[in-house]
Image 1 (spheres, rainbow, N blue to C red):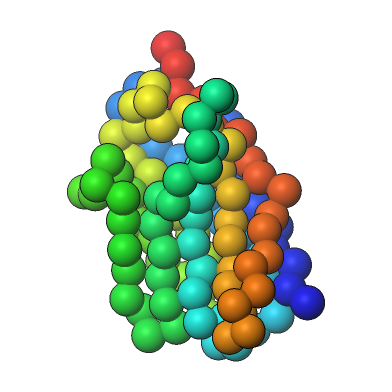
Image 2 (cartoon, rainbow, N blue to C red):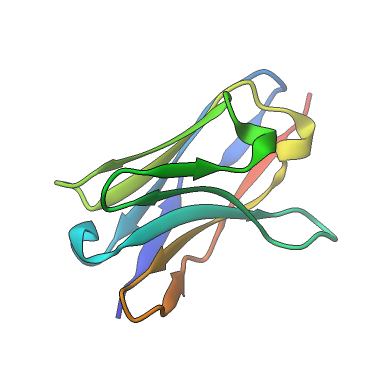
Length: 116
C-alpha cells in the first residue's frame, strides 16, 4: 500500500507561480513512476508530468517550459513547480504513484485556481 498526500494548491493570479508537493508513505525508490495529473471541471483527467526512479521526465505539451517536476528522495516527496500560470491551468491536481505491480495510487487532490 502507498499513500500519497498532495499540498500546495491555492488561488494565484495569471502569470504567478505555485509549488505542489506530494508526500509518499514509502520510499519513492520503490515507486518506479510518479506523476501529476489534473482534472478541470467538465473535462477528463490528464497527465501533466511524470518522473521515473531514474529521473526521466515527461510533460504534456501545454505545460512544457512552464512546469517542472522534481523529487527529494530523502523526504519521499515529489514536487511540481508551476510558473507562468494561466487560467486554463485551473484544475484539481492529483498525485499518482505506480508500483512495480502496476497498481496506481492516488492522492485526494489539491485545487489550483488561476484567476485575477
